[in-house]
Amino acid sequence: SAVISQKPSRDICQRGTSLTIQCQVDSQVTMMFWYRQQPGQSLTLIATANQGSEATYESGFVIDKFPISRPNLTFSTLTVSNMSPEDSSIYLCSVEGGSWADTQYFGPGTRLTVL
Amino acid sequence: AQSVSQHNHHVILSEAASLELGCNYSYGGTVNLFWYVQYPGQHLQLLLKYFSGDPLVKGIKGFEAEFIKSKFSFNLRKPSVQWSDTAEYFCAVMALSGNTPLVFGKGTRLSVIA
Image (cartoon, rainbow over all chains, first blue to last red):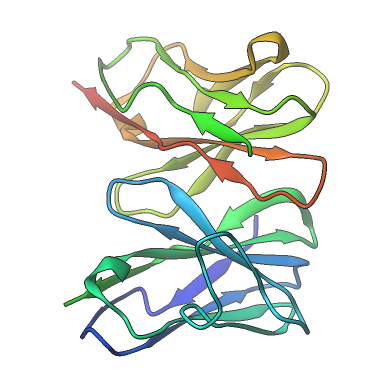
């Protein structure tokens, strides 16, 4: 399986600030995704990070709130902007493609607490 | 839109008991099916997957799942659970038509007691 790392692993932030989460994969992958897992809830897809073009957002998520970058086939960032306590969640990146077709593998997640 | 239902929110079993976790999905077309596991303090890991062929698939750590197309189900089973199986289990479905995302169920927390 892919080796996926995320930074930071956790953070505590003040409301109104922004946090950028990084996701790094140890080999090139076709697809990278960002999910949110709110406390006691399942995973919800925020967006698909497209290399070389704008991310594709799911219903209920917008670029102004969750800007995403994907400069190459092994790296992506998700920014949580103008945070509020409701943004407290675990944010996960996942990857698909390359040597792991048709199956998504997940990073360790970033636990975000907004005060 | 497709959805995934996991009927059991929390299951408590004694060691050596048999396990079956239910998963049903709503989508009439062809799907890929997955079970993921999240052990305490660890990240989400793939347990097993079904794409096609034999509807009974075997995964890691003695888990298996059976795809029953007529029932839109993909239940997870293990004949004899261990304390180390304590974790959160997520069923996920991806429809193969169109550019559809992987959809997760709400998860089932399994607690295995000695």
